[in-house]
Amino acid sequence: MKKRKKGISKLLRSEPFRLIGGLAFFIPAFILERVGLPVLSLALYISALVLSGGAVFFDAVRGIVRKDFLDEKFLMSIASVGAMIIGEAEEGVAVMLFYILGEWFEHIAVRRSRSSIRSLLDIRPDSAVVLSDGEEVLTDADDVEIGSLIVIRSGERVALDCVVVEGGCDLDTSALTGESVPVGVSVGDELLSGAIVASGVVTCRTLRTADNSCASRILDLVENAQEKKSRSESFITRFSRVYTPIVTSLAFLMAVIPTVFGWLSLSESVYRALSFLVVSCPCALVISVPMAYFGGIGGAASSGVLYKGGNVFAPISRARTAVFDKTGTLTKGTLSVSGVVTKDIDEDELLALAASVEYTSRHPIAECIKAAAKKTYPVVLPSELAGRGVLGYIDGKSVAVGNLRYMHSMYVNPPVTDAGVYVAVEGRFAGAIYLSDTIKDEASEAISSLRRLGVSRVVMLSGDRAATAREVGNTLGFDEVHAELLPTGKVERLEKIIKESDGGVIYVGDGINDAPCLARADVGVAMGSLGSDSAIEAADAVIMSDNLLRLSDAIKIARKTERIAMENIIFAIGIKLAILALVSVNLAGMWLAVFADVGVAVLAILNSTRTLIGRRKREK
Image (cartoon, rainbow, N blue to C red):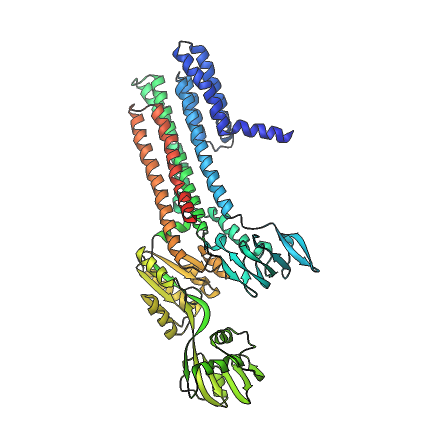
């Protein structure tokens, strides 16, 4: 019974019902008025007004009781009822019908916007298939503990962050990163919740609980984004609170002063004042500007960029300086062999000896040497000295692989001192292996794209050795490179850059050591699949993939959103001021006033939805 009453109440308050019901009475009333039946016509007009405007009147009265009544519903109620009182029933009902039509358009646009973002963020499954004593059990995702084994099949979405322990698959990460090409994963690779297994079956061990997994953290970021209002949104809120009382007072004076001085009759003065009130409704601003930012946040999220609030759009759109961390941001964060120096031995043989001794090690340096070697040999009695190197025997000969300090401890003095790894055979220097972090494939294009967008100064701050940092900086065309910096040194250098810059400063980083800079910059952008919690917490925006080109997308989306919001502000205020002036000198009546209110609101809302249209184009 309660559900039925609630359903009936919802129907009676819905815009389509009120609009169609109001028109069902308005059209006959309009015809009867023209054929000379004013009494019956007035009765139908009143019925039309009650049916169409009942919900508006109720909200207006409730606002008065709560002492929060200076809003558009209060103004529309005064305008429509006042028009009926002074004998302009047709216009009084028309005002309300047009207002309801505008509300309908508004709610359709908002629903589409929210639905669009909800579908985009509907990435967290409610359940997971858990392996328990060899049997598969469908379990609520919130109840799955860390370390549990879960099975994910083709077409299923990953419910919790996990690592593959058996099997392999192609992974669709488009919902998280905006990347459309599936990624191949195998044993040892990490899967983030929200991704989809495109093909294959994998057994994984969970790394985090459901509420701490990637999908949940994305949802929290986007759902809470609107709590941080942009400057434009805050301006509109303050503007409407001051603006509405002023125009209400002006309308009152407009109704009283001409009558007192005998310039106009009471009905003419009141009609003009009511028209003034209709025009003055600030709903176009109050609705369309926040909606532009809401759409912008959704559009950015579909491209793999998560904004924490509308307040980020303005500073990133005006940025003229971009500051980058190196490792993990400009580079892949994985080492590779970049060069080999040998003495009395072939390069391939040196790599084979080093890889053989390092074969059982899981250290990142060992992994990259093993990847570069074309062959390996059996090793006897391998032993490792943590932080120094590894010693083993191949065909009865000792082979030592390690850093310069390890070589010196074995009384080996390499002729080069700037390599990453050194190799000694039978106590004599055999060669050195140079290692470097691989630059991301898209890094060069990303920097060029930023320059095309007007970012005139590009700087690198790195804790790496100066030679390594300069090599990366020169390759990518950076204006400045500052290396061998501790986290405090990075912040100090960033402070100087901010003081020197004539526009906003973006800092892009991915690690714990980047958190202070991400917090200090005008806009902090965290890179890389929500990697470091501290970086994400400090950043203003998050690029869900490691793709640096998303940074340009973020700036483009911010500029478009800012432009649309400003268009709405200028258009709404400009049209309203023009028609207010016309109404005040009796050159415009209620009909034009209705257009200025409802028409401007609808046009501004439609303009705001352009952010969503842009999002769909990018998705295609």
